[in-house]
Length: 222
Image 1 (tube, rainbow, N blue to C red):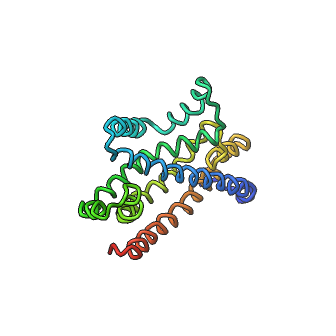
Image 2 (tube, helix red, strand yellow; image 1 turned 90 degrees about the vertical axis):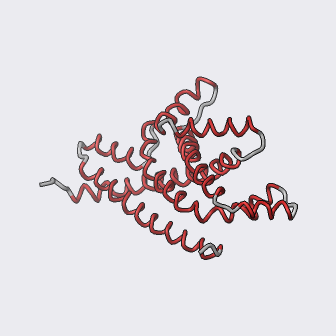
Image 3 (cartoon, rainbow, N blue to C red; image 1 turned 180 degrees about the vertical axis):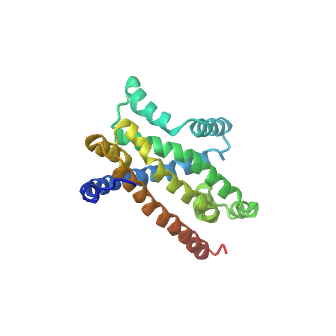
């Protein structure tokens, strides 16, 4: 039987809950970066400038093909050697944001490709600028089919935040490791970490499905 200690559990729970706020903050900021940069990556691959399109496409493929933990190490440890010194938090946010931006750019691309070509022809007939065509006509139609993939990566970012512990970011798993090292008890902190991740991920996934349904209904897609 497990030697579970309830008094120890209640003792460490506030510390883990505080670390949970750091985890949520890391996931939220990282996802915000990924949303913006991912859209820039997607649109950058659709320009008429061939060299720019190729450069962005290769950059996206490079980021997608290398591990997130390597990118975290590279930004944090290699950056100072070229004159770019960042805090663990900043390095982690940039690494997570860029990593998931490469994946979200493909989600955006699929959504943009799903928009009928007739919509582009209508924009040209109305003499709309490229910017207005994208943000007033094309992107609103591309978002509904892209939302499921975008939601999956939001949950993915949340579950990947423990990788930030490799550079000392005090997120949830890093705190659980610290508690275990200090007390030589790992059962309670690791179990609580798993429960906290489930308690956040499952409602988030349900909320994203509801948001997808609401978006489709609002935009008149269904």
